[in-house]
Image (tube, rainbow, N blue to C red; front, side):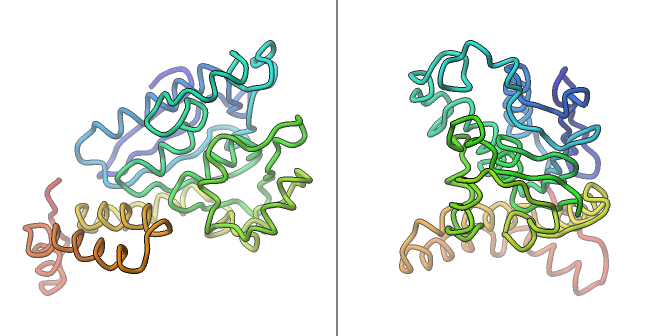
Length: 266
């Protein structure tokens, strides 16, 4: 655990929490660094099959801590617009990476959202494979309020998730919407009074599936919107060929036939 993010692992589920509760988990430089560090740690760990991402205290993440970003010119980086162009993490800059890393992780990620989820916080939640949201959560594509555009991966992450005309309206107006609204708009997968408990229950179910097949399924989801039909069909075949008749796939079949809990190897 560091000063901004904690991680606990139990039964192949990583429970990751933003821990700046006194500031509603707003994003300051230390939070950016902490999130990326935890993401890199998870990517290097053995045995993690699913991640649950949430925020401690009253909110998931209130977005940028504008006070901490003073003097940064036009960008949130603290170094002006030029630094945003630098690709510090593969195809992303540092600020995009805090949202994109959850999509890049090989295992499924579930975001449990409550309280305030504005701006950068919404983009971080959008990096998850899906989102469980409290009905009274407060959400917004907030950047236009500050004369900015969403630039932490939102445009990439929302593609195919939120209808474009809806996304345009929410971006242009920075209109706030509830967790119940988020379900209709496309930002939420489920609405639940206890999003973290619901997310953990789903995570435990996912953790009891073949982890190799799960990773291949996520990889295919990550790429299929950019592929042609022929490329999708080939990718399905290539990825299936990697898992079929492997020990974990055979174990999945045997556990179902014998009606017992599967014993997968990571």
